Each structure stands twice: as C-alpha cells, then as structure tokens.
Image (cartoon, rainbow, N blue to C red; front, side, top):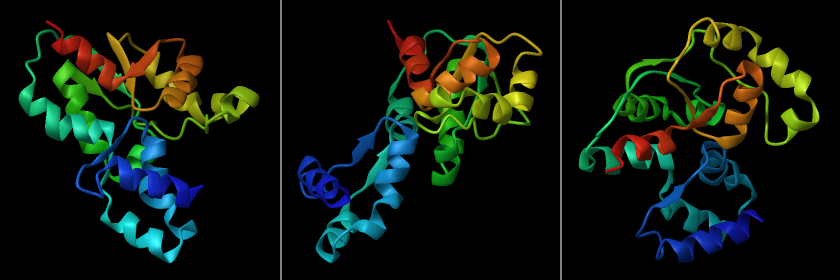
Length: 178
C-alpha cells in the first residue's frame, strides 16, 4: 500500500511539482515519514521528491497572508495532536488558531488523547485515562472555541470534556467568511 500511495501521489502532484496537502495531521505524518521504510528503492526516490504538507501548515503559510479575518472569537483552547507535534507543526497550528481568536490557550497538560484512530471508540477508557488532566484544565473555564487538527482527536477531546471540538481550519473558514 505504501508503494501504491507513493505512485498515486507522484501523479497527483505532477511528478512532485505540486505539494500534496493532507487534511489530517496523522495522515500527513504517515505519508511524509511512516511509509518510507516500506517503499521499494524506486518509490523511495519518488517519495524523496514529494512535498507532503499538513493542511494546517499549508493554511498558515499560504492562506493566512492572503485572507481577511472578519470575525474572531474571544478565546479558544487548542489541542495539538501527537502528529502535529511529531511533524514539528505546532507553531503553524497556533498561528492559525491565533488568527481566529483573541486568546489561544494550549493546556499545560495537553498530551496524547489516546484515541488512536478507532481505539478510542473501542476502548473509551484509554481516552478517559489519557485526557483526564487536560480535560480538567479545559473544563475549569469556558472557551468560545475548542480546536484541534484531526477529527478523531477532536472526537476524543469532545468525549473527555463534553465540549464540541472542531478543526482549526473550519474555524478559520468561519472567521474569514464574508
């Protein structure tokens, strides 16, 4: 499958000339780094020519300079995903959130939500345990927006806090809507 996706990405990106913008941070990490050991030698060479970009990074670098923010919320709490951290993209995640809110809070105890794709659905006790301290911090005060960068992590944090988490990109769309 790693070889098939690399070959498909080669076509989608016009032979590596266009970036491959990926909507979920965990998928961006998987495509950018985790498939590499499974690639054939030829596909490893193709992969090296690809520019795989998380959608939040693309939004921070390509969209924010061109967008007019029309409405901001007062406060937003931000849950950086494990993949965002592994990719080193936390700064761009904060930048997009900061464009949407006057105050952006990343909880001191923000960490892995342990949702792990479908694991949180099958074993909700994993997420409950992993998010206990972060959830206590988040629920200690109200926020106008609850944001992250991966739908499954958002579901995990919703379950942990009882608050509706959404993609920081959806909040950016809302903030820039005419």
